[in-house]
Each structure stands twice: as structure tokens, then as C-alpha cells.
Length: 111
Image (cartoon, rainbow, N blue to C red; front, side, top):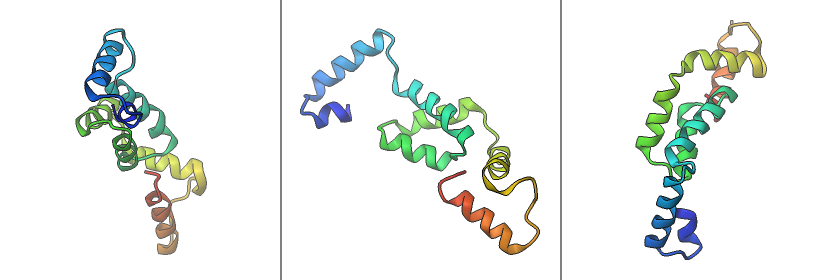
């Protein structure tokens, strides 16, 4: 709707077209949200980042919440996996400075 509206398409016509496409089996916002979560979470993007990106694409908060719930992800385990794979290896932070460094890495848009 947002993209069609930006191109000057009337809201009623845009909704009619989208309803027709959905009836023909074209992807819906809910399906898009589910696929987006399934793709981005293993890459290290956390729920806040995913929620913001989907909201920017016009997906409702309810659809985002359903997509996140359907995946049944363990965000803590994903954090550990991302930390190991991306930069820090298997070692847990021994010093406070190292712990802060890893926390900053996670806070910068990744989990």
C-alpha cells in the first residue's frame, strides 16, 4: 500500500489489487515477515533490529510478533553463535574490558 500510494495510486484501487494478488496466492505481509525473520535471525540480527526493519516496510506489529513467535528462536543461543562465528571465538570474556567490547558488538545492530 505504501509503495503504491507513493506512486499516486488511489488507496481503494491499491487495496483491491493487493486483495486480488493475495487471493491468487501471492506473498502476504505476514508471510514476508516470517521469511524475513527466518533469513535474518541466523545472520545475527536480533528481534529489535528485525522489528524495526519490518515496521519500516509496512508490516504491522502484530504480524512481526507472530513471525518472531513462530520461529521459536533462542536469542541467547543465537548471541553465543554470532559472537563465536563473527569475531570472538569460543572464549568467554575474562576481563571487564573484553566483556564490554563483546556487549558493544552485540548492541550495534546485531542481536
